[in-house]
Amino acid sequence: MISSILLAVAASVPATPAWNPTVGIIISISSLVVLLLSTRIEKPLVGPKLPILPVSIPTFIGAMAFGHIIGIGIVLGLTNIGRL
View 1 (cartoon, one colour):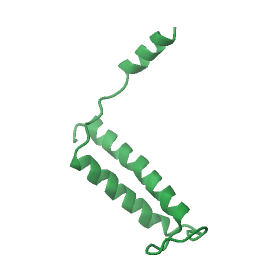
View 2 (cartoon, helix red, strand yellow):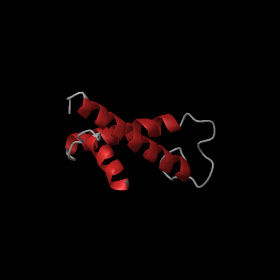
View 3 (cartoon, rainbow, N blue to C red):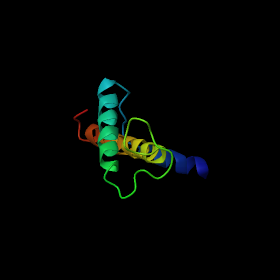
View 4 (cartoon, rainbow, N blue to C red):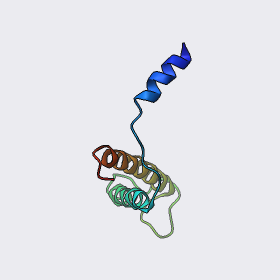
């Protein structure tokens, strides 16, 4: 029963691109944009501070994680419409 469910799901998975520099650039830019937007939150300096950036370590980690999620969405969307 489980194997038939997995086969049904595997048939509906869209094609994903192999990693290349374009994918890396898209994810990097989206991470930097989210990091810049994270400075606009109400309390970005709660917790240990980073020496260079005006955000705290938890804000930095959260912004990078969310930037990767946004970047992966962009890459999959561009792949789905045939642009990447």
